[in-house]
Length: 169
Image (tube, rainbow, N blue to C red; front, side):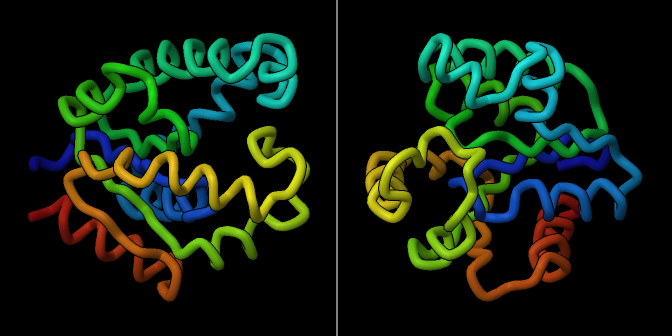
């Protein structure tokens, strides 16, 4: 893997993709692309509003188009939404365009991190039950990544250093 390539962060919600992405971007001097932020800006509405208007399928189509557009550049840290890997073809294009890193965490850690977060439409209702269901549904979804980092017990700097070690190898 040569430097100047993108680093694409994938994984369940609340595994640290945005926070780690910001640190990596600062460390490398790369552009930080938070896929959800780009989507909300380009659509002029929140993720929750997109879900409410068209459902998850409509959101995933928008997400895939924006992902492919953002992967056209170099020297970007791309923090994806947790479900960006679900659409057909997204995993392949990510693997072609950079180092794909899956961030993971225990179910308990994710539930603790998202409790009280009203901005996650997939968690409507009982957040703990929804997290468990989503984790089960996506149990194999992130295995395509070049490497995996469990963020449960690590701080942001430790996760970032691990990723940089793989990126520079």
